[in-house]
Length: 363
Image 1 (tube, helix red, strand yellow):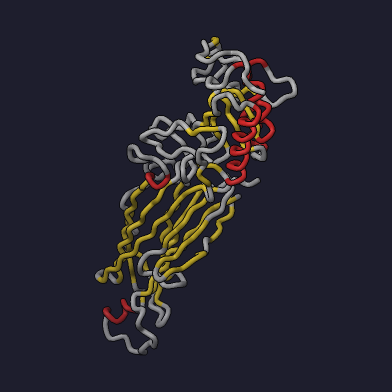
Image 2 (image 1 turned 180 degrees about the vertical axis):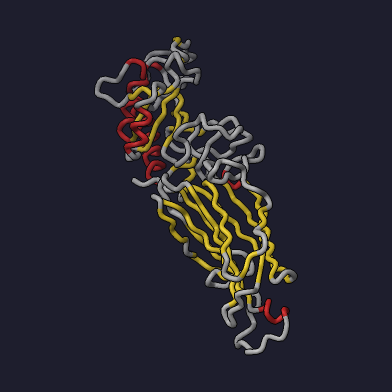
């Protein structure tokens, strides 16, 4: 299964349907005589072309929808998407004007609240060198047909980036355009409370934390239903963090760091361990392992996390599974003979006193 990240570009107000800025949309015929710079400026056409780099190849993004002056672009990409670039130029085609000149200034703003982050401003975008991107960016004066390229790393966090562009043609005539790029994981679904489980873990800085891919949503709903059938007298399962609404970096502490490994693409969720009676945990693991892959996390003496079950989509790509199984923090639990560490409640390698009765109340 390919895990796709998703980017949407909304074309600026002055773009025509071929994604060109047309500084005189009302002109249907060209007069052979250009009398002054005012006339000449009217025939300038500016273009911004967006591209992504995948497997060392630059791929142009074509609009998937155009509504009036707004163009929509989508990127479905595997995890190898690292770079995005915008190629800008201004041309005079009819008549050609090789000595005509132009420049622009672009300023961007970064709004991560759309992606589920309600906390301090995100880090700036980065050039490929790792340096912070300038803001604003100035092209300097360029001749007709010359290109100005802005290349930046795809941020780990999802976000909406607004690009405000001020074009200056022939040194005096100004035009403005706006591009908005939504960087996100595509088609995540909200997991709502259902039979046999309850949603927990919402915080002020991440108020919506249960977004998953569609198939995993169905699997988690089935886990809850099957748990209720097997253990109708017991408490529900408590589903903690999955992914944010647009996926991407889930910085649980609101500091733009990534302790929440795996919670970026709607394939992982944490399920409370301590709220399951010890006598019921084997039954709970049997239920979960029918629909997903389960690890016990937080049990190692090197790990200070609260112990819980780290549950992932059953068709998760092999490289993600290999990464988890190569990490001391994750203990695989889906075996015929379930490891005792998957049953016991430990934190930092030390037994934790349970607040629930230990005996089973399942059927």
